[in-house]
Image 1: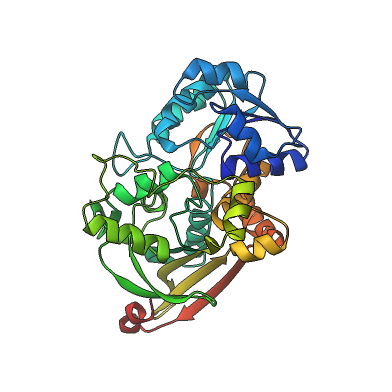
Image 2 (image 1 turned 60 degrees about the vertical axis):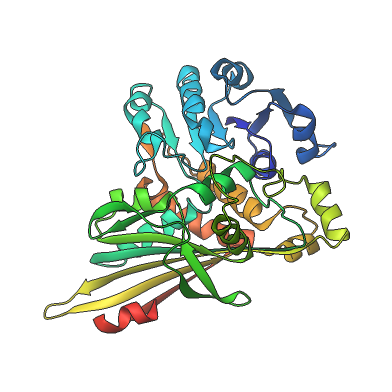
Length: 392
């Protein structure tokens, strides 16, 4: 395929490289050409064209001739980029939602009919979280006869002396200042920012940490596509604890906007290496867990089960030892997005969240991730009903 990648940051640059290795014809677009080339590397042969995600015609001019438009720009521009893809009559993929039209429904879904009319497909929220987490939740639900709840638990942990944006500062700021979405007793609602503190145990070396309610897109789409009663997402780690402290001191609000001291620009690979050499950035980790609670129905009694998936990403230290100067979350998001493109549903038309993809594509993405050093494990726990919440 001919693929245009819009937004050449930590994730977009690595995604472009991975797609080129897959044999696709790839070029990129960004409003800051010099910075985009620093992310790609001076020796990279991937072309970079000037493109402003705020301007539909700027995107159309830069992307003309592609078969698929991969949107790695901040989610605030999703609708502009969606309209550009429709104007170009091409397939579309993005990494997350802004939830502007409806706080509980991704704005991309409003374009389902228009993509259907163009006979093109749009896959949304196709990173690691959301993205892989959606696939694991859907697979967990398929292992059960009925689903009671789905819980997403994430760890974002950066060991650094100063704030370092290990992924998009715009996305981090939006998540930190948005009210968490929860699905309780079959209804959507808002949760309290950094509320419902819980101790959750991730696999080693992370272990037990505190996690808090967070604004994650998975909650919105999984509740639309899997019959269940409850769903929520919580995040923990050093990054979240710092955001929580800022929020409690009144230093974190949409009215203040992004403060560059707290949300610096994403470092280029050379800058990551420099931060490590200077001892400012020591390590970073990202991990995800998906817990699906439900039952298998027997002839006499229901058997309550907890299906737990864990996804462990190589740490910054491990990536550095393998010769890579990318962060764990950029590494994971780019690799997952590349597999979504490899198994893209080109024979379908409309807008689809990850859990709506054909079962063959969903299974292939999860299976192939294991060859990219992302460790995915499954555990099915048989529990008595009253013990289930204690185990979670």
